[in-house]
Image (cartoon, rainbow over all chains, first blue to last red; front, side, top):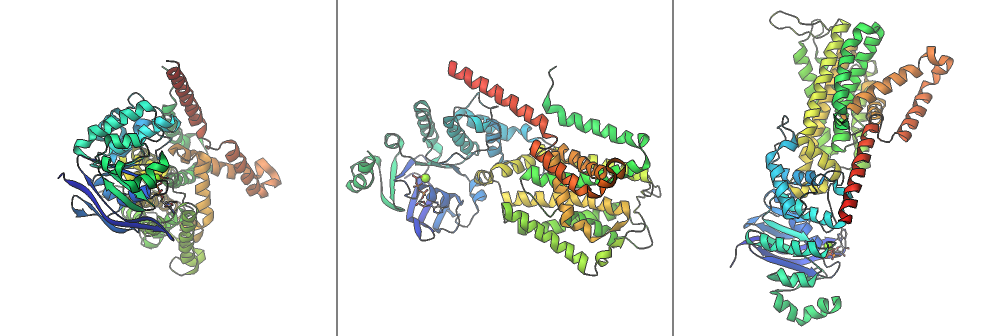
Length: 249
Length: 339
Ligand SMILES: Nc1ncnc2c1ncn2[C@@H]1O[C@H](COP(=O)(O)OP(=O)(O)OP(=O)(O)O)[C@@H](O)[C@H]1O
Ligand SMILES: [Mg+2]
């Protein structure tokens, strides 16, 4: 069995009376793309927010490398290797594309006390940013302002910023939404390339993409896990077909 | 070589330094004294700019740290002896920083309009402590009768009783604070603060402990306000609760906004502009009997300036630069679609 990097056990999160995530357990292994699908409002983004610590006050246990990180604040989890991308593009619009990535990369090399060195001359964060931009297909766009790029390019930047922090666990919230056909192919290839030494959670509505790249699919409905199995088994599962795939296609 | 707007702040800083260094030989003693006062306010405005423009934290209680440092200097200086300048300076700045640490740890848990209200509330609290209790002589304030002195092995390089010496002492501190903040804003710390200003959620997701960063900026800004407060107390030798009042907090915020938040030199320009406007409008020589209503004129002028120049006085050059960048970018994407 492959090594489990992230293990979530019995995660629940409520908003007032609404149970957004209901007793969800999940394991992310190195070398696997784990797809998370579900109807709108199923609780996929909320689950990611709980795993990263962006949302507090959830029940359940989150472990990274076997260590309980449930009480850790978001920034500490991020530095321990938990990277995420956002469903709704969440960048620094007034900064250049390069600075967006460099700043994200700086999180791994913060040194706030070294006042004499200009941040732009920090070779560590600069190099990491350049690599992430190349991977995400944004080479040549470094000096453009992020906020005025096309929507699809902003989606690429969203991924590049996640990669720039050099995470081991990638929690990607609908990374392909809004990307052109060409970028989608490229992004799926990128994920397959990263798979070897990362654990990847891929939230996605594009079923073709999901069944093509994932080795495990979890289906959520109304905050609960309906099924979790290999793609072929999910495709054949009558409950999933009725609740999700039938309605979607 | 093409004219580079990016070099403008640097050129401005050098020009301003030369002009300020030459001023005592060109101006009347009154003007030298006024400029000393303005330079102290410029340090104060620079300290607030670190929060407002640098971190996106609009503090409406920044006078508290200015005032605490001024009181610390006046209260802790020996009565009948000259205090040691470096010691009194350090005590005043650390006192301001300590108060900023306590206040910052609490107020940085709030955001937006609540942050503005809570910073104001803490400043008012400090104001009433000095106004209504005996610690600082109540509403009458306290005197710092003898100016602090710097002595190196019996040698006194300057004498703060001398107005000219005080002027240059202030100018050196203003230049030092300006250079320090320029370096800080370019450093990784400054870039992280800028990231927090624009998108704190993303910064946390990337792995920055944003609360600690904001607290560090808040304490640093309080200490720099303390530098200004110390100079104020040393200059006039008198402090009173009005130094901590919300008028003072409002005035320094106005300097930052009028000069143009987001640019260090904006704070300096704002300090000069606001104080000089105030002097001009209150001058009977210029406005005759209407000078009584200087506050009305000042208010109207500021509303007009902010309406016409949303980026402040120093923002004009930046607006031109942003426009050129947009035009270049539009040209590039047009080229990409053609291909
Ligand atoms: N901050 C919040 N406060 C209150 N309710 C929320 C909050 N965030 C999400 N919800 C609710 O929780 C439920 C789950 O939302 P979530 O965004 O996790 O769904 P999702 O599976 O990501 O959906 P989509 O496919 O549309 O992105 C929804 O009913 C949503 O309205
Ligand atoms: Mg979602």
